[in-house]
Image 1: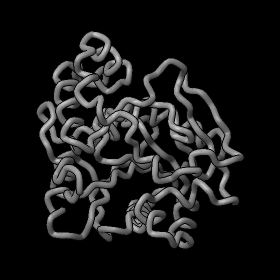
Image 2: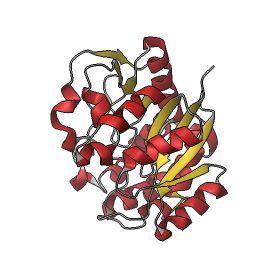
Image 3: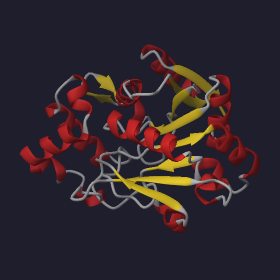
Amino acid sequence: MGRTVAIVQARMGSTRLPGKILLPLAAQSVLGHVLTRCAAIAGVDDVCCATTDLAEDDVVAAEAARHGAAAYRGPAEDVLARYAGAAQELEADVVLRVTSDCPAIDPAICGALLDLRKRTGAGYAANNMPPSWPHGLDCEAFTRAALNAADANAARSFEREHVSPWMREAAEIARANLAAPPGLPGTTRWTLDYPEDYAFLKALFRHLPGGAEGHAMAAVLGVLADHPEIAEINLSRHGATKAAPFGALNQQPNVRNEQHG
């Protein structure tokens, strides 16, 4: 049976909110929540924090160690090379990609995506082709072979920075998408890019239950239903998503779609 490793990219540098991943959030750092939730994903054998080789990111590697995650240090701007190096070092056959600014990531959704990729035999699977989940629940899964092919062939700067664009459009890679069940607020932001997002997450996490119950998307939806004023905190930032630079990559043909749930 192959090894599956959750690799979380993380660095202190951020143009919009510097140091955001180590901001405190309900007794943990933002990064701590992400790593804890990744460790709870069914089918994940190891968790790795892929940070940079810059001195400013020594604190990121230390935070990863505090949460029992491996730390891999690589190029600051070439995130694709960082992922390929981390996958090689941890001997991953399958990689689950999560970003460090998504502390509300749901382990069950990530597990469902891993299962979809395995059942379909896809080289690349995601839950945002096109986006249908609240922004902050995004995850991707791909084989080591697909990752290595991307590292060998991707040449454009945004392909190196965003890891997956080459895999999302390469003709030789089969793809699958995990769509959200109907009725979800797909344009809402549960991620951290702006000060308003941090205020939203602080208010949200004050009400989330502890442990596995609080990791579920349903718990967030329950809090927001009981406290609709929380959803208004970062309302001005709704619609701003990391998928935007990919443009047509969200509409690639030959993608097998399945609905979650």
